[in-house]
Image 1 (cartoon, helix red, strand yellow):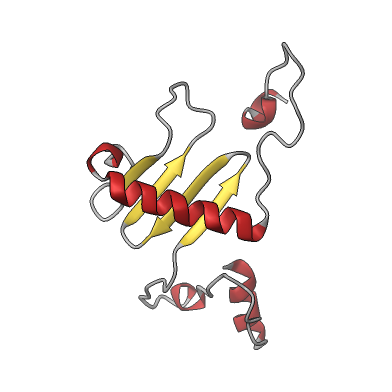
Image 2 (tube, one colour):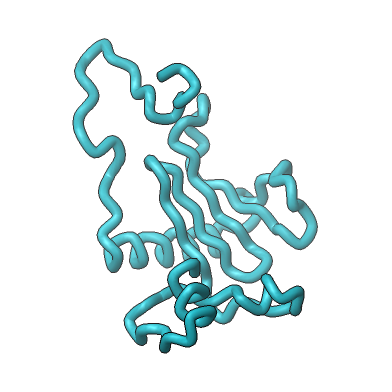
Length: 128
């Protein structure tokens, strides 16, 4: 999305193989709707946003509940996990995320094995 926005600001055509969408209209204060879902991954934390739905997987959670689903139109602070009531939606969005991850080459986390007895400090940057 950032690259697409920069292209639009610079008057450069957005490459057809770029999956991102420009958000220049938002910067101008205009209302807009995404045409496609948005996906992301950072250090093993995964998410997809599709319309009002946001599916997240946090690798650094203490529990092993896996994917969580939120209705962002009603729960902007992500307090009410709706995954158990919307299993078909969860499975569909997991499939979408995995297709995207394969398409763009998301690597499994951690990138390198963590030696036995060592802690994965990557999600605790304040302790570096």
